[in-house]
Length: 361
Image (cartoon, rainbow, N blue to C red; front, side, top):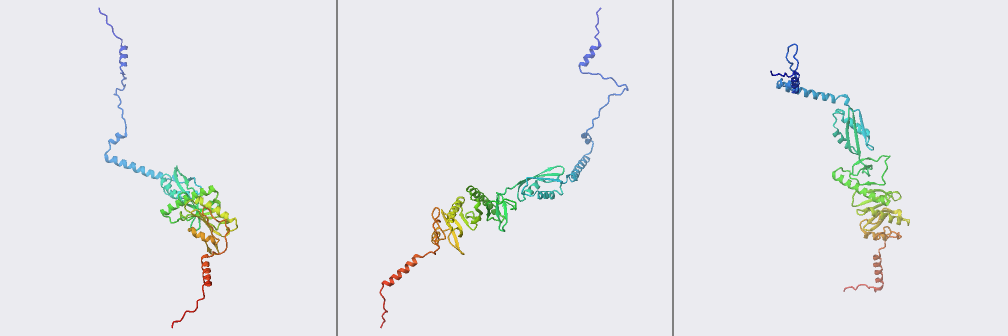
């Protein structure tokens, strides 16, 4: 008889388990397996009609807009603090007041910070302004001010600061330090051409300020007249305040040194009290003075200055001057006229006496 070998059941069970099959026990109540139900918003919208979907979307949008407006206009976003930095010449109180008026209706949340920055940048003395939010109720304003470089005397007699771009920055304050000299001849028309000319005046002023500062001459100057850049003039200060120095357009920095040196040499003889102007013309220095209401000398014609020197009031010399020669107070003598008179007298003495003319019969 052949022997039959029966495999143990445990081995089958292990083989089926290796294949990933897991036998679950049957429920005691005899019911089948429970079916899982997955809820999703997309599936819910699938059951709704299209019109209802559009209405629901509009309702959500309106709710969001109304909620945003309510939140933005809430009292928690009203402006309470405004931090201003970088303002020294510009009043921080003025900036804060302007900012509060601009945001009185919008609040911090809805504030147009770009428009507010542009508006603050148009204030006198402000080159640039940057406004940022500090939620919930604050703003930060950073100011970059214009740098005053010169003082201008206006037609009304006011002294006003200006920057390198010719922008008026406000009147000179009592506690401000006045520059050694100021600018006269500012164009106040307000046109684009006037603005360009004023920029050129400021640039010329800065150039002269550097040159005269290097030579140590700024303390002797009261003002520089720049009405016409081709005819630069300087009013002296101190004991020479009545003297105007006319420098022309070329080499104005060095011409002032030449004019003042010649003026000082002329004053050493005690004759400087009557000097009213000094002109530097093509290498010549003209010292002009007045006697009463009569002003002698010429600022344009060097030949006239030679005849004026005969009168003892204007001294000229090629290169520098002949101011060291003592002037004479006598009026100029017309030598040609006197010579003609003498010739007529001599001729009358030598010629015979003429008798009466014969009568015609």
